[in-house]
Length: 427
Image 1 (spheres, rainbow, N blue to C red):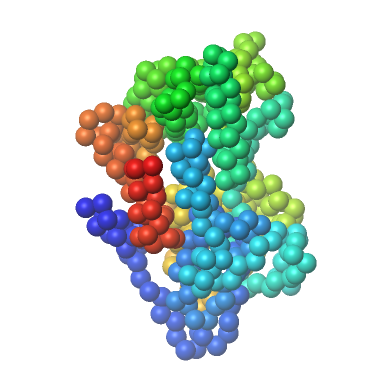
Image 2: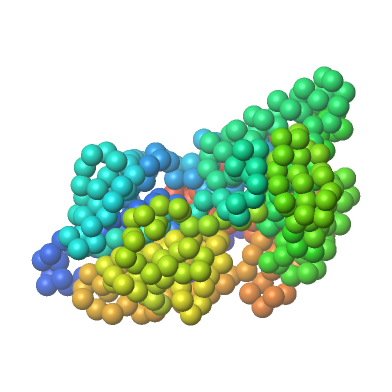
């Protein structure tokens, strides 16, 4: 049943259109169009994943990293419930599989007149269509001490560092009969799921006492998961309290110190380690690379309903790098994925044929949040919620597993899905 649903999900478009092949006429094949994608995150990789059916294009990915990382699962790597190797895909292998070129480099400058990009690899590459998908970076809102004393969760290296630090701290605390205090700032899905995953990992170790780690969440708003239905927020709070996790709500962070977090009301929360998950912002290199383009209030490039930038229709932006003026999207993997698929299936085939693309339509398919093995909830597009216990909880957990498996399947095939499943189930 699981695999049947996975194949069905893969065969249907995420933005509301049925999966179709784009037919290109002989006349349209005369000129090779050069498509360059900056950034191989979930949006960028979905642009490239099925472009090889277009015979009149060449596609190139530029990314300073050698791997595509499944960011929605980074909290599992940080908690040790998933290994780094099982949460990444080599761009070279993906390039071979999906028929694009890969250059491991940074974009240093872009000449939008001649349409050429200067790379850190001391090379230059030309483009006809440039897709900006550089992703996001943590936003510490210029909080005093955050850059010095906080750990951030934005890539595989961050996740590995967090896991190593927590493991070392908990082990030392156990030997000294103390408790290693971890504070997580931000009670969105990343912060809440990371907290539950850390609890699951470091309270089930047979050689370590459950009392060797203490966890607390610090959130500026008056409830956990503020973007979710209130029922989900309340259910998650109850479950975390049952796990003896301290919740600090309406807690405005003023500064991060070496030994804890100072709040605006004068309270000081001691902590041995502080992890910041309280927000993201578009990649800081955007304004340097595109000084003449228009930027939105989120720091992303302003785009039209075809995801083309307002000042240069040959430059498109998706995911956290984009700001759709009339209908801004949430900074989620779901939104970035849908935008990437839209460019691959609808916009790029039309643009390289000299046609006007159908507008991008975002169909929210709901959200899932899972507290490890303890509880899961789902929120439907209608706003109705389910989960927390009983059948609803099991359904939320199953959907979470299916969504995770879908990306594994799309990039690594069935072997990758089974490998990850067996490791999590039996190791």
